[in-house]
Amino acid sequence: MPDIIDITQVAPVTDAQAARLASPAVFSDLARQITASPVPESAPRRVWSARHARSPRDLWSRRRAKQRALLLGGPLAVLAAVAALLVTVLTPGDNGPDSQAAIQAVSFIKDNGYITVIIRNLYADTAGTTPTSPATTSTSRCT
Amino acid sequence: MRSPPCADAAERQARFEAVYAANRALILGYALRRTANPDDAADILAETFLTAWRKLAEVPADDDARLWLYGVARRVLANYYRGERRRSALADRLRAELATSYQPPEYGSEHARIASALARLPEEQRELLALDAWEGLDYGQLAVVLGCSRNAVRIRLHRARARLTAELADISHRRDDIHA
Image 1 (cartoon, rainbow over the protein chains, first blue to last red):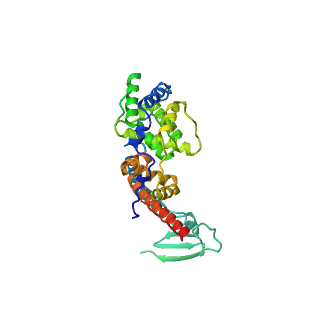
Image 2: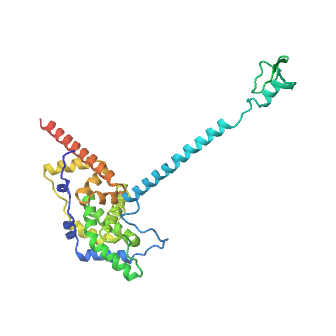
Image 3: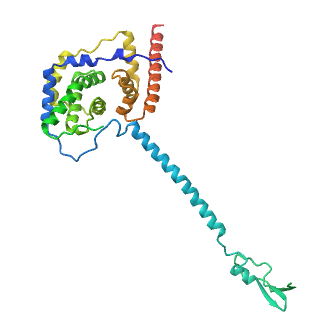
């Protein structure tokens, strides 16, 4: 904490001295001239108040509003992100076992208790490539 | 807090005169302490109360009127610092009277040293220290006049005092060097 330097000693004039620098007649003359000047017509403006405008109270309430927006907005943003993630994970893509590419690569034939699996393309890419090798078959007993 | 309504001209004039009578010496003192120039001080007083007359509905009641007027005077003064000086015909008589009645103070060496250190500060810090010491405003009142929070006032005041102390030490140091 710096030393407190009393700068009141270097005030050129006090309020009491200022009051005596001009006579009441001169002060009154100034007031008379001011009140004789026209008042501009303008739209009604907000009444100034020490508690309003840019008062500390106003700053405080603005800060509270920001905090409130963050409190509400934060969880909403998290919820939206989770929902987007779930939709991405749970939606079936084009490369699953039921995809068109998988159906083209492998087929099944049921016949007399047996299931014949025909592998049309061993290297089939279920992401959607076309068959490149001859089909092979494999048969097994279905119980 | 609401300003009393100015329903008619007489009521409006009476309200202005009450505000003027209660605060004219305070605003004249404020202006003289900043400018140390009676001509400028007379103009600042006239401009400040002319603004109050034109915006009387915005002037708060009671002691808050003083803070509102300090805020206006501060802006008028800032315009003067920016070189927007114009002599108001309204203040002719006051200017003439102040020219004879006002005597600038003569400082002793210690006071001159403080005045020099104060003059070295940035305008914002000087004004803050002056409002605190010369106008005797507390943190809450300073916050209203300056349009910031009490905490900001406390921090800025601390910094301004520290800077003033440093400037004072620098002046003393230089003086010692000269005398050595």
